[in-house]
Length: 126
Length: 492
Image 1 (cartoon, rainbow over the protein chains, first blue to last red):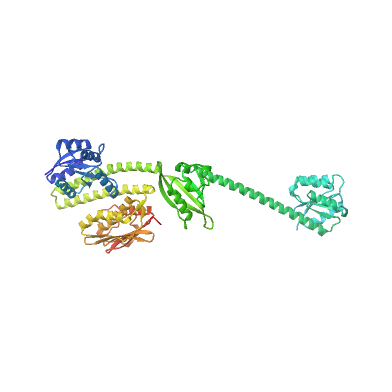
Image 2 (tube, chains in turn purple, red):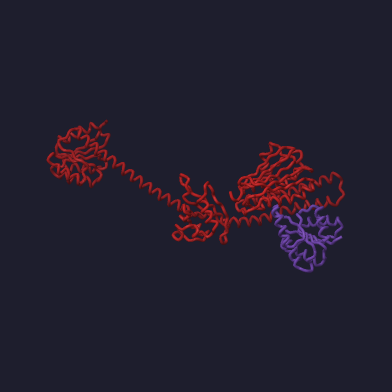
């Protein structure tokens, strides 16, 4: 089972997603903003990062960009959580933004537990 | 005819017989007659109101002031006053001289009543015609003044407008520009550009072309386009101006500066991002928590049902927030919708691909067909993608397992037609007219459990109409529903 870093500024959301992942036997490390997320990456060396896009101060894109620019952490897969106003067009937009920030996958928030578990497994299997 | 109705005649003669004779004869004919026995009396009578006299009968040979001098002074008072001189047989020469000086006619003494009547009638007729001519002259002058005032007013309006105005003649030469046009397009003013062809004046080829196209347009057309000029985004409408017989006399181009709209849009974007976070986040957290509970815990049957339902409702609420944000974007954003040439089939294909997974999951046969060739459409690809995702999404949502959804893109006249046809639950006839209304949802047996916001179709309709297109629906309960979208091709 893997060690997963979960970064989101909403504690309730973190709690719920952590429960889903822990239910599948993963160890979940929690962080509540971008800076803390980066710190935890260094301290905890997670196998996967689940990263919310929309956070105050340093957003998910910025965190992802910084990680992917660092050879030490580049190989850690990043799953972006997108939650943006308009459905289709912006999903595609964030998808493109995600690509630009080299995220490994993205998923709409709130996430379907099944879908999340599946994506996480795919990313960990890489 | 009653005495005096026809106006006033002045008789100036030193012979009482003549004065009385004239008075008698002319009074019978409806004239008001005033008489004077010599020149100075005549002049003072005339001087009271020269314009009120129709005709003056003037004896040339009188004691005191001579008839000639009276004639001159009368004509000084009123140059158009008809003066008929009364002369003896022996003085035809002086009659001629009087005519040279401006008398209208002469009548030799002695004269018959008929002769008198005739000469007075003629002179009065001349007076009437001159008055009429003068009236017309004044009217024409007033009309000219009005036209000048009106023209000045229109020019002032045009010059004060925030929108730019550019007028050309039928050969495409600049006839008028206002300061806003000069500023927006960064072109010269007045004399620098007046009378020169648009090709030499307008900075952008698109604008020159629009003017030329408008000049050649066979029907009522307006060419609308958006151009980036320096820092500003300009919307330009160009239309032909026609005369009463429909001939093109020139063109008018109106230029709107959209920069402030873009600024508003940016602010709105920030607001939307704020709302989307502040409103969506808590609901997302609720949904996510319910999802976590449902995924992990062993639950008694009824508890699971309620939690599942609660989760679905939370999901519905998130979709509603999404749709509300989307519709506010469209409603405010129609004005600045981007228009670019599009292949509609590519836009529809993206929507179909996006829903393929869901269709597969449900066991639906989702088919996509394109009939080539297709003209291009000017449009906003994201907006249209939203429309087709909504229509195909609905078809997938409301079609039971094993059903079929067909999507067809084809050309039809000047339009591209997209048909989305399903074998779903259908919409009752009485609901059809209202399904594009905001928040309207058809409630039938098969659809009660499906969560929706009732905004999707009204968003789709608003978007299609912003593209000058048309959306239509046909449906039969239990058989299926067909949506058709017509989008005008970019060439039409």
